[in-house]
Image 1 (cartoon, rainbow, N blue to C red):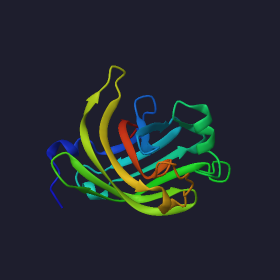
Image 2: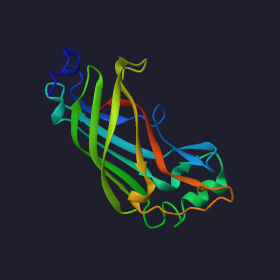
Image 3: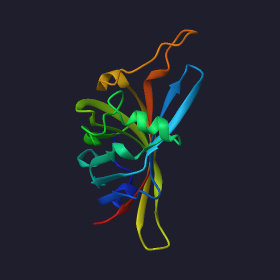
Length: 186
């Protein structure tokens, strides 16, 4: 394990995601020619950071499936159905870290259990530490950004439509995107 930079010691504590300054989104290829971007607007999460031994840190996130937003109501409603996320039966997507490894001066691999539609798979999310600041309201904030690619099929999401010109309507691979701002609560 890489030794923590001295600044990480100062970050020790429990943090909660700030939903007004955090984006948890996704990107999928549509019709083989463009990308559709979306996000979850209702989520919560905590991180417990041990700045002396970052490997002892952990993070948990819960997304409300009903809050999916691709800027198209018809598409959002379809994504909530049994064809995709089956929101009525599986109202939440969860992530619970199992390990956090420092891979560079400000880079981390956060590995954990991602559960979508009742199926749990281990994923690793590379995150880059963006810094820490005290905001104008006196809150201690930290920021991270990163992304990872998952396969929809790994989570039992197999709906698709063959295109007349070849290919399919929705890509199997989906990029998950994280732009995180968290506030220290203890």
